[in-house]
Amino acid sequence: MMRLFYKIGLYLVPVLMALTSFLAKAECEVAGCCLKRDGTECGVGADDRFPMYSVMKFPQALFVADFLVRNNIDLASEVSVRKNGLMQDTWSPMLSTFEEERTFTYAELLALSLGQSDNNACDILFRQCGGPWRVESYICSLGIKDIHIRRTERQLHARPAQSRKNWCTPRSMVRLLEWFLVHHDDNEPLRYIWHLMAACQTGEDRLPAAVQGAAEVVHKTGTGYPLPSGLPSGICDVGIILYDDGRQLPIAVFVIAPSSMSRVAEVARGLLSM
Image (cartoon, rainbow, N blue to C red):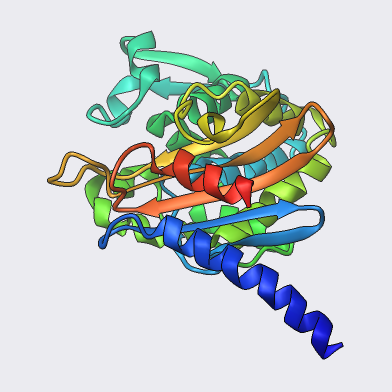
């Protein structure tokens, strides 16, 4: 038995050393990643805490799906929105679609939040379905403990450094992705969320850029606030890689103070090659 452990160690130690070296791109950069493959989780910094930025909109969407199902609310149900009650100086494609007031369906709000990372749409969903603490409690009820959501987009807009209040570990996010993989066909809202993440309009230079060969990536990106360097405080992408041969790999990559915008793809590529 000891000889078996020794042989396993001979294989794993060089792999982990290579990945750790690969992640250490710059002194100020901190990266963490996790991948589930063949029933085994692997990665570096998988239990460290990383701010989620807009990746937070993924667990929020799962909570919204549960809220709609529990309250017998259809995706086509409408929410009235007044433009003067929204943040005007944030990333929000919805602002260009109306002048004073209009209605949005829940399907439209989810598409804006998940597909286009619209910050106002995210906060409208918080307002209609339940705030950050309720989202966190729901995710915890799924048996996933290390995903913490404590701030809305408006609160983060006012104090960007509080992004660290919405944090997760790469391992916990991979487990949530695995739950989604198992349950995405349970009801119409979950199926719709899957469709939106498969058609994600952001982050083509992140996880999708790391995948070689025929594959689909169901994912959600996150980007931090700008630093004096011109780069964001962090970048991340989490998702499920669906290969044509039937492999389904949940993966999460987080990078704090990235040395370049290509770092998520580079880290993911290194992890996938191990």
